[in-house]
Picture 1 (cartoon, rainbow, N blue to C red):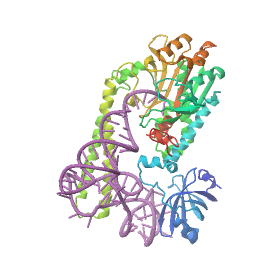
Picture 2 (picture 1 turned 90 degrees about the vertical axis):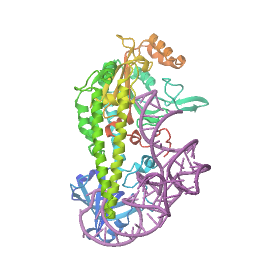
Picture 3 (picture 1 turned 30 degrees about the vertical axis):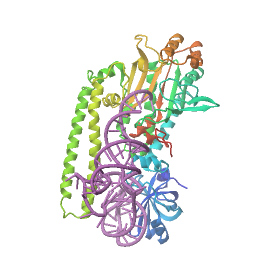
Picture 4 (picture 1 turned 135 degrees about the horizontal axis):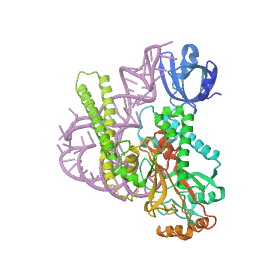
Length: 507
RNA sequence: UCACCUGUAGCUCAGUCGGUUAGAGCAACGGACUGUUAAUCCGUGGGCCGCUGGUUCAAGUCCAGCCAGGUGAGCCA
């Protein structure tokens, strides 16, 4: 058996394939079947003349997502997606679907697709996202393993909230209350003191009732932790890591990124250009419009975006009016009229989207202008900041109030901690949060008290500062947010096979 | 938890000022067409207008409550 991904080795040869029919088109005496086999997509032509009457009649019976087995000749054809097509000589049905396949080749709403997630995964776009996800996971392991990091698994059951801020999923552990982990970091620090450099790669749970395109209740996180690393080295590692993964994925997932219509020019600059590194103070100045980037301030850029949007909206409104005048003509042929009405629906949807975008801009402006020094960045602020750059940006030196207790304070300014957030461009927001960790026992005890955290839970963690305490740093990367950005998928729910989010436990 | 938006055929959506028998495209089914790319063209079937109550001579349309979903805020990766 041959897979579609291997076709270029079999040009002109007769091969056997197995797969599912995703679409069929017919003409008299000729049937076009689009086949998928998990490795790719291929148009198969069943011509009554060459394949024979029996195969042709079988082909005519086929319904969407029926499974088949076929033989045929591989022919180069530049018009096709993969560059090849199959001229079928033999065709056998493995399973003919009696019921209609729910997901058609037309548009569907999110709720319907999510209810049919188990079938939706077969669709081309979902297939491509999952393949890229796989290559990202592989590239992540590759990067760390090549450098000698040790992969470790942190426990999923935990006794207490690590940071005390987020809501955890409560469960039960032999009649005792327990929680599902929200981070493996503290355990990662312990392992780093044993192994030098480690990384975790596992599930993380947050019981936040957020319903946004950036949140999941269950997601996968990569958390490296390195002994003898300060925050500078940490930032260097983060940047090299992201560059390396993006580079590898671009090489391995060319076809998938093409299906996803990903602009790879931006990804190329991610690999080649240095990421902007700005302090929290500088980020605030940018938000306030005091500090221009590439000759333009945030306020000016937003005003420009607003004008461009308004122009587009006007254009669409004119188009809608023109078409409405056309269908007012009662002599118009019915089919022509329907066609125009469909086009109108599309235009109205576009208009709705653009108007929604436009309506957010005043919020962005307000949020940016009125941002209070010392606060954490909200979604609107992140959007404004990343809009200023085309590369991921690293924001470092944060006010201690908005960050976790374990972050190392800045020797030069006691109000700041050595944390770093990486914000992905193109509106994708925070993908990495990291920091140098506090190494001083007394300072750490003080911080735990300040954050009102239960001291007894941290006794083993404090041991790490009692015995051979060393400077160390680490970070956490949200896998699904990373996949969202690389694949240019607006909603995080499409980047994991079966998302668990507020209001969604099935399928 | 709060704010805004949505719920009409299997799917995506129209439905004007409350007024006759509820509309289209796609999908399904039947037919035409020998190279289609979400093919096209002709035809057929398909409805608890989210649920409950209210206003009215009359409700898909107006009002209230509930349910479900979407987007954002908070929180975060």
